[in-house]
Length: 210
Ligand SMILES: CC(C)(COP(=O)(O)OP(=O)(O)OC[C@H]1O[C@@H](n2cnc3c(N)ncnc32)[C@H](O)[C@@H]1OP(=O)(O)O)[C@@H](O)C(=O)NCCC(=O)NCCS
Image 1 (tube, helix red, strand yellow):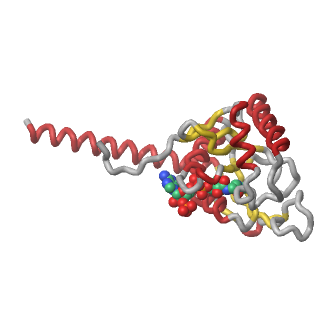
Image 2: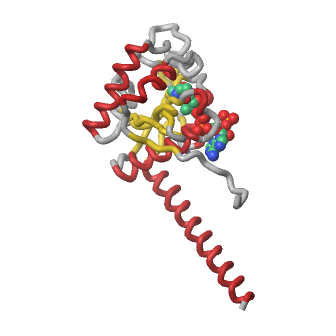
């Protein structure tokens, strides 16, 4: 029986597997997916990248995880330490990239919540950052929906891109652990209240039936 509630695709973060390579390579070669990166990746670059992602998770226990939906590789989401130097580094960033067929379904959002849970509740990080090219509205919308906030004074020119490059201007968003703690405890409290409300409605209905 359908209760008329919205249904969410089950989104799993997991370690990478050899069989992910084909879908991963196809995603990194899609110009629309890579629109806000300097260029698409070759098959060899994707092979090396998948290997690095896997080793990173093996070594640290966390990283940019494979996102699996309905048995398929949807892309990746997770945590990384930027290798370049900027006023906000060293830090841990949250990042995402999905195959186009998996956009517009809330999958990146669901995957990011799991990654944030790991960052704040397991690793107990004080803060996460997220950044992207200024024109990447989809990614910025996701950051904002996750409660990340931007101070325009922290906008920066990406040090890996040459002067005059159209993607050089980046925006920086931050989210602090204490904000996450407040949000998740409020969500848990409203779930408890809802459960209690449902239980008392059920017991009222039962006593009416008696
Ligand atoms: C950035 C990216 C991951 C965002 O993906 P996305 O699917 O738009 O993100 P979300 O998971 O937040 O989904 C939001 C969309 O799903 C819809 N949606 C459907 N069901 C939903 C649900 N249950 N919960 C939330 N949103 C839902 C929303 O309405 C929204 O739709 P819209 O695009 O029409 O506004 C994706 O566009 C991407 O991979 N881009 C290329 C790579 C990239 O640029 N990465 C970032 C570099 S920093």
